[in-house]
Amino acid sequence: MAKAIVIYETAYGYTETMAKAIEAGLKEVGVDVELKKVMSTEVEDLKDVDAVVLGCPTYHHDMITTMKTFLFKMKKADLKGKVGAAFGAYGWSGESVEMMSDTMKHIFEMDMIEQDLRMKGTEVVTGEEECKEFGKKIAGRLK
Image (tube, rainbow, N blue to C red; front, top):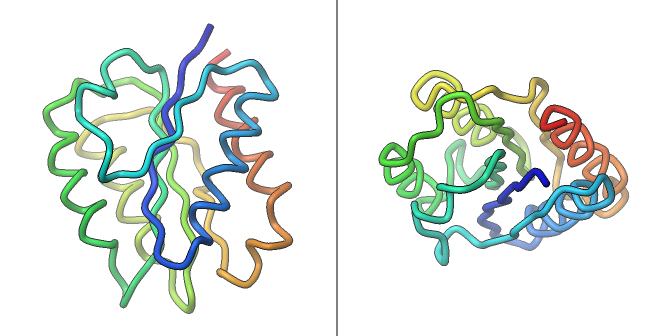
């Protein structure tokens, strides 16, 4: 069975809502999923997974510091060729998702799901189905 980890940070709960819906989408297709907040995640948690999914809101055109710090730690893991995906909520810009995705693709050499998932915070409430579909898209790459 394929295994994925969804690691996220949240400021107002929107990115957490997205993370839970992505987790649900992955599970619906039979992927074993672990959902963790970034502060409780260690590099060792990435060792035995087939996919790493990162979620972070954009705050003042940047990632939240805890996610940025975790990306530096992720360099210690051998992620080359593993499936990767990035998502996040934003208020007016959304740069954090592209920052995570670029790092995963170009630094860690991961097989990235193209078209990252970005949602305006106010859209998250009605966008849970889109998040589930994103989870299913990730699962499809694992099959």
